[in-house]
Structure formats: structure tokens, C-alpha cells
Image (cartoon, rainbow, N blue to C red; front, side, top):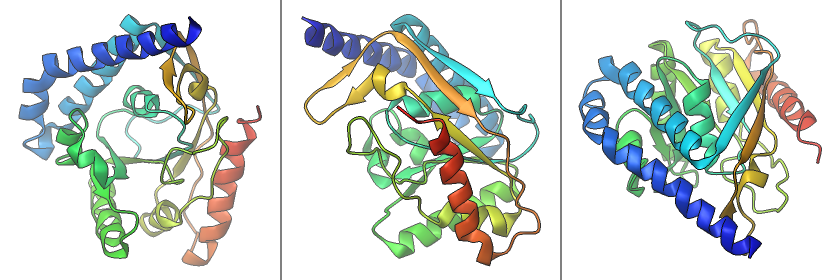
Length: 242
């Protein structure tokens, strides 16, 4: 019975995501045609996420170690345990921001429109694709667009999830562009919406997210990449003790 209810709830919250996505689709389409309107596009992504979570009974509790500056460009780095992670950042991030994610999302019926326009798709098995993706991300950062990235590169296969090794890309980029990194610990979201390898499921509840103090990268060089990566890894992992 419990398994049935959790599967039913997943269908319920996916219904609301799709309902508001198609309701806003004309606005998504128009605002995605020109980068000048990306803030408008992100406003509706935030609205879509807030309404979907409200109607499905899934809520997000954000705890900030330090206030995030509205007009500051950041690179947000977080662990990745659930499809809800995208909604979490659509609500958390402000203004002009974009995601970097796997190239399979280009064909996603909901996320495809974003990864063909504002967001960046990358084939992580291709060095050329990764180079082009981070080059584009660097250009966007210079334009004041914050970057949201999951440095593990995928949702972990373990259940409960364990933090996997980080890729170097976002940390090299942060040093190169002198952009502060915001480590984010997504703590219990895998308990609210999950795929444990045997079933998909979800349930109403409160997702806890901890936003660590931004890390200043000014004065760092490429030789500090591993140190920075380890620092972010340890900060995120410090809040994930089960």
C-alpha cells in the first residue's frame, strides 16, 4: 500500500510540473529567443517550481550560512540526488542564472527547451564537448550569469546516496574567471523523491538545503584547483551525514 501511494504521489507531482510547464510554455518560448529576456525566463522557472511544489505538498527549507548577494555572479556547486534538485535551484538562484547538465537533457520534453537555449548541455565522455561547454559557461559568467552545476556529473547510484568524486571543470573555471563558489548541501531530498534502483517514488515533505558561505577564489591559481575542489567536497559532505 505504501509503495502504491508513493508511486501515485510521484505521478501527482509530475502532473503539476507538466501542467504549469505547458501553461507557461508560450512565455518560455518567447523569453528563450533572446538572452536579454533570460531573467524573465528564470522568473517563470522559479514560479513553475514554486507552484508545482505547493500543489504536490513538497516544500523547500533553505538555511543560509551567509546571505547570497542578489547582484553577485556565482558558481553554485551541489550534490545531486534527485530530479527535485533542479527545482531547488530554480527557487534558490536569482536573476540571470543557467545550468550545466548532461546532453541527454536536450531531448527531455520539459528541460529540452532550456538546454537548447539558456542552459548548457555537455557530453561528459567527450573532452571536446566538455571544453566547448566550459568555454560557453565562462562567456556566460563574464556576462553576469551565475552557473549551477553538479560536479559529481550524475545522480549517485547508491541508495542511500553517497557523495561521489568531483570533476575539476567548475573549480578551474571559478579560478580562471575569479568567480566565488557557493557550496550547497542538498540534505534529505532523496528521502522525498527517489529512484533507489527498484522503484521511483515520492511523498509530501520538507526538503532541507544548506547553503554554505561563498568561497572567494581571487588570488588562486590553477595549482590550487585540487585544494579548492577538496574544500568544496568536504563542506558539502559535512552536512550529509546520515
